[in-house]
Length: 54
Image (cartoon, rainbow, N blue to C red; front, side, top):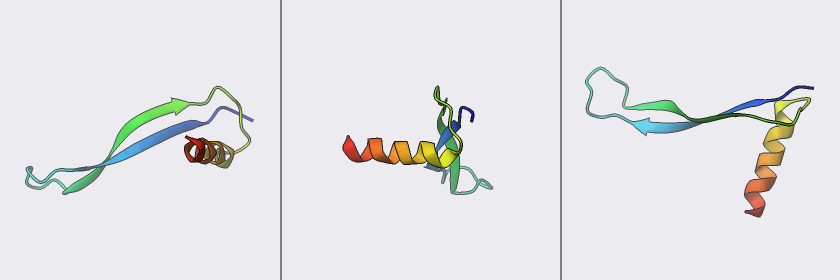
């Protein structure tokens, strides 16, 4: 079991720069859990639960 690193990406638009794709993913936030988990799915289940009760 180990801490899990979670990275949240944001989809951004860029229509002003020629040669640059109109959409790209940019890192919005990165965190590492204090708790230790056997798999990343355990963390995702916890996050889904927290989002459902907030």
